[in-house]
Length: 163
Length: 446
Image (cartoon, rainbow over the protein chains, first blue to last red):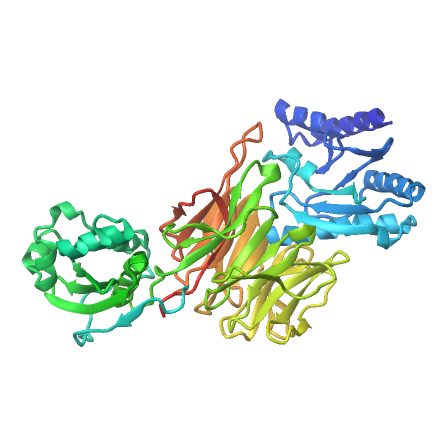
């Protein structure tokens, strides 16, 4: 399924390139295929860890956004199911922003992103008592690169076991 | 520690009210004033006493080079090479031979004398108008020898004030965040240093993440954000005693703190349930007031110098923009309408301008606008820079700048920079480690 998705994204990117011919250089096409971005949301798996089999630990966001994508909602549903099965586990949702924003605004943005994930988990039956939100703003990037792909990996909310 | 260490005696000379030399600080550094800073003269006995007390070989020369360096970095003055000086320091201080100083094109001359008196440092200095062949100012200070660098800064401030008509900013300190380690795991500590980068001192150990330190009006307290025990909260630090305390008891992350101009309140953001609003807490009675109440992000608040207004950053229009409101939260209005995103508004100590960070087409700018949002001027453009902080006289901004990393994600640095309000005289401020989030103190000797 994941392979299928990557293929689909690749196709999308390629189509977009042909149609727009905006990203005309070979290098940019290569980056997009390898990195898997849709719009500017990261859809790859390079940085993703797993809470359990089939339960990715993080979701990704578009620049300045805190809206959950379809893929993010799928990830969070898997997390909710896993939390329902493991009712003694509490989590911390760590919200992050990329480096292309002012520090204070990014702290607020990280909090907003983690809360978007929290709200979604709650609609799938997870009590707010089991969820703590912690924003790191742009202080803890996973990727130190200064390019759109790196930034997309850093715009994230990561679900971390608290106990 | 900062309090009144310096006792200041005014001696001698009623000053002529008409200044013949004038430096126009609104114009930038196109034509810096040539000034000769003669080494402060010192007798051999005093020199030896100081050498013993503070391990400086010639404190007279050292103090004069502090003055020289300050005047030069201001961009308004051009200190002349000492090699060209014809007159010996001790004689120049008694009665300059103005023809000699005129010959090397000095327009102003600074002379002085250092003495060791009862274990104290006594410094006198004079400022001379070379062309008019007149003394413009004469002052003397007495202090403990360990304060010798501050004496250099105070002399610089007096000269600056006499020649420009505005208060100086040299006897000040910078608090900032010292950074080390890889970008993905930065270690951050609070650090403080003199405005010229000397006397650097770390105030925290780096065990927890710390951000955005800001001085109170007397520069004895600092408010900042600490991730102590993974609970990001606003803290208060007493620089003198080292005491730290958390500010208030809030149900979520508090951040973006600043003091009110009277130092009695802290204004900050509280992030909760995906929205951030602005609150104040009175430090005496601990009363918390909510200032904004909006589903958007409201952050980076900064008071006007009279305390009547607050400028802040909000994305209530959909994107980060700068807003203004009365200090009770009423009459909110947007003031930034240019292209791009606007953040980190900071009110000038003179009251007439707001400095900000702007993001437009992938570039970051430090700029200023009037308090009605008009007259926007961008002072500097770079890959990444933000967080301007004003010098106490409102003439210089300090901020931090980060570099782009290479293909492998290497080569990241963060450094402090300053720039004049005119957009001229951009300079890096040397720090022992990488540095960010600078905040400029008030004048310490006032």
